[in-house]
Image (cartoon, rainbow, N blue to C red; front, side):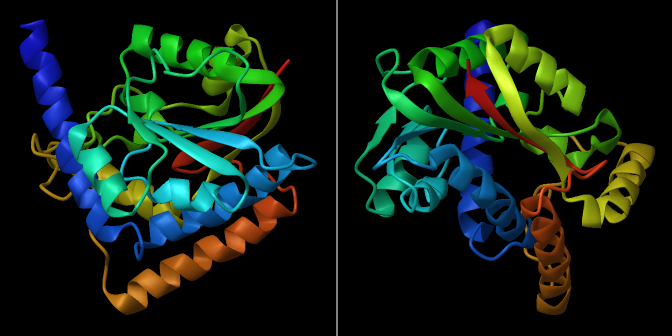
Length: 260
């Protein structure tokens, strides 16, 4: 039964990566995410020459291309589909492995990142993944984490991505501090679109969350005018976040932490 459950979850992740690969260059959410995370990458790598950056759960490998702007990027990905997408992008520093047992020696990484991975992990594996990121970081090394936020935003998409939990700032802070991290910055993101997201997810729960995740979940690019409007709203929000203003609510939690 356990093996069957694990197989089902891996296949679910494979489907999610296929959907992600199709939309991540143009979808407003991914555009916004890159804008939100870049100021934290600048801060995490400040003063370091060619820092080693590890993407723990690299997915399709797209974020490794972003990380290359700030140092030498490495990726660990569990699924075969993810590895194939990464290789198609020409990525060579991408290895197969689990975030619960990273194939890197202790104290060998300057910056570790975990983008929308932890919320899909069972409790024990989530705890192991956070401990592993702490282990591989050099003293004073930085961790950047992005996770899904707020239980009230559960919906079709939660089923499609095999979501286990959603976070509040305090919940994520507690888990990271328990592993030994000190928190430098934590904010909600996607606040500009929160009323729309909350309304859509509430309607999905009201009519019953679809077991197939609504087939596409949130993995589709809306019509160009809508996509541009939403992208613009998130661009304005990213400017505020870059200026040091934390959002009080949102569909994701973004955190910069440091290995004490």
